Image 1 (tube, rainbow, N blue to C red):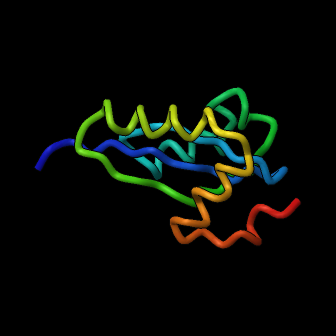
Image 2 (cartoon, rainbow, N blue to C red):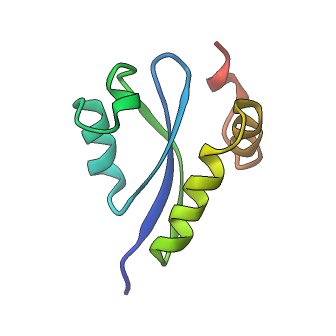
Image 3 (cartoon, rainbow, N blue to C red):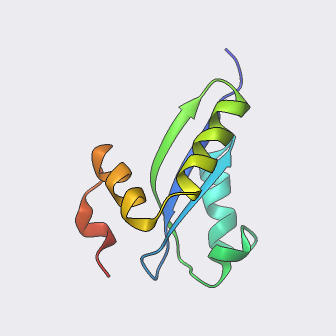
Length: 92
């Protein structure tokens, strides 16, 4: 069985969204919540992992992250809703 790569989305305490890439969802989420993750999430803790996709190769996971990060918020929310995440999570 090969290594797994993940694109993930965090819901920050201020209801903003953060997309990232990792090989270990649990450890990466913990790192964000400890303040050692991305600069963006450091001041928006706690964060909650609300979505992830698994990929068999790093390139595909990074492409998914890039595509998500370069969308307006409304499109990010629509993407998540289309993948089964409840829209009420995002209301500010």
